[in-house]
Length: 444
Image 1 (cartoon, rainbow, N blue to C red):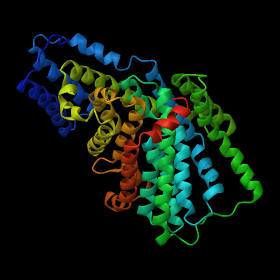
Image 2: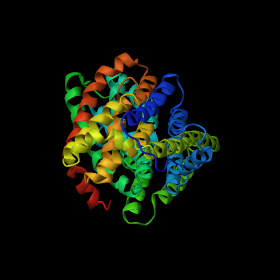
Image 3: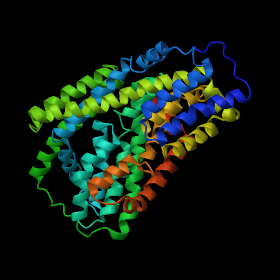
């Protein structure tokens, strides 16, 4: 499109300024991120080609390329599966399943919340959806048992950050397509960090709940017969992530095929095993999934156009010139990029942040010899941290709504978890073997 174009001196700075100025101005006026990216690409192309030489057909081709991928089909299938399982009686059974193991120990409802978030994450893949589903049940339950409502909402919001990390993960699919790496490898790479996050949340809750833990959790002791019935009922829900992970690891099916299997399984379990998925629930799930998938797909299409424009305008090379000195020090480069992503994630949502920053960071990552899959896991985790940090914090907003607390009330109790999660990210960036070793063992 811009072949043969040479950029020198002030022209380089002008290109970068124009691209990001248009983006920031469009966002400041409340324009959706997708349309803001189209304006960025159009404005930059107009500047580079002198206006009259711009070819709209090329823009249309790049928009189509953004979604013209078999791998991208996995995304709507997993979204549909999550919606069906959420409406098919899964949430309540997972909570009861967790009660068997940790419900009766001191601070038990907090541990139930943390464990339930991990199990639910293996089915939904979205922190917002998981917070909405679990928060509506667990926050009132914890408040009724004597826990502080704001602290309960903060725990639910923070513990649900595991949802976009534990496979099947929507951010992992987006990164895999943007970076041209295996979705299966990304899924396998997310298992260890998801477990790290869960253990970290349990450790934080242990120290936080010691001071004001209610003497009685309000969870009745179950008989042996009730335990067996609850355990058996919960196993149906928990078989799905096992089928997906073992099938992917064994090469039985691809990530896209796994999405199809998840939808069929969710339909069978919700409609015929739990018998809670009615026809109206099915229609509602399909409509909700279509809306969510359309938003993400259109965003992916516009991000492809913006990424193409950045590539031909050499914006990634220009922006990473200052970091090129760190290529000889991969660990330090990894650490620096994670800090940058955390800062950017404070003001930008996960998916657009991944789509915009991946083509900028990936050349540096490859040049430094870093594993693009392990980096992708860290990169997505760094982006996910922005879900519970103001001023955007979409997960915080959902937790506030479900827990009936204000943003001012939920932010202070969220900060200890946020700081601990940031510390975990930085430790993993300094010691990437903590991700790479389990990843290779799992066949990623």
